[in-house]
Length: 273
Length: 308
Image 1: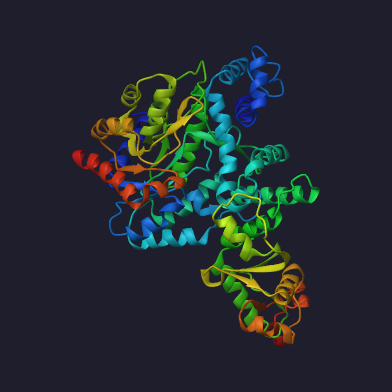
Image 2 (image 1 turned 90 degrees about the horizontal axis):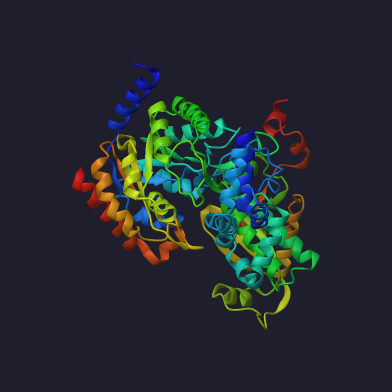
């Protein structure tokens, strides 16, 4: 147990400059380290390293490791947050003191934190929520095992030619409250905010990674609402309005709800029975 | 002959028999184009396998592969370019937690890509969470104390890895910014004892040695020549930068001059050396581009050629 206590304390010191200060200020550090199960040698070691200049490097590396993947994966969100990134990082680290093992989980935690912060009102940064949603959707799509996902979708469509329709698993619709065609040129050249004159309204961007080819399309409002509703809810029966999307492959046939509850009863099996 | 001597002897034979690969680069995503356009000239490709999958240890299905990255790797393998695994997620130094599932994943990838050897860091990056199946991240790689009980713990784990993966296993010397007092061994003593006990090899990160020497005031050459250099199979070379008054292993672009100055001697003195790997951070690619990467490889290959 002792080595574990030592390792927990050492990593906590890297995560918390406040703990480093407390250990430095407590003489031998015993009081500040009382929560850990340590031998006297381990306490002496930790007290010694808390006083070394290298502990500041450990603390900086801890923060930059956690922030690095966020900055790299969500560059536009990070640009919008520029002046407040330190505050947001502090609050995020306080809300999630331990980094997730999987980068994708850490990034989802971060995007959920940003969206909740916007919702709560303390993080009032224009365009932030919609850009965060877009970058999260792009990341989610990029992580999907595309060939597997597409093969599964094709199998379902073949098994259920009259099944309800659902968006193709390699597409996403992201709703915008501002015109992306005016906003993104500013964001992509990292122009400093505030961005004046970006028209507000209802806009829908279609992210499409079918076949491994990335396409981004601005949908008309009716199409965006239609596909967005299907994305949010259950599969719908095909109607005339959906036919063009089916023909374009943006929608695919999927398992009927009853069959989804009883997946063993596929049509060929039902016929055999 | 004792069991330890037998293991060491068998280990030495295995290291001597390894293919001599030459000079290569540690893959990062900025190198996708470089690798694709240099399939006919790469001596080998070193990879961090953990960057080719997403690992969520507390979920039923671990190791979701990242398809585009794996596609590239498959092309490299199809071009018959050797691939060497250098993992970061085993956390072999973690107290009270050893992830045998991770070893099995490494075994699958070793078999799939026929790694001639594989390596890990002599450190810990994960700690047990609520239970041993839900580890938490330490946030950075931290060194283990060089004590006898830690040596025993790691030796047993090395032996487990060796039993599951049928190619030599190397451990990399640490970079560290804080200096633990009252350790029972120096790092070279610890590494020598570990290799003698288990027959494992050493991945000698020359830049780590330089960084530690600068920050902790010792002679890098003394460190290198205190190691049993017959155990060194692979070298890492890199560059660094200043942070908070210290010199860090930031992999900032080209290889540090102090590394080049030491490299020639190390290559000459390591009889079982099989590869020299250049590593850099992907954010440095725009400043280096293919020409910069090729220049570092050219210099590394020149050092290699002088002694092979």
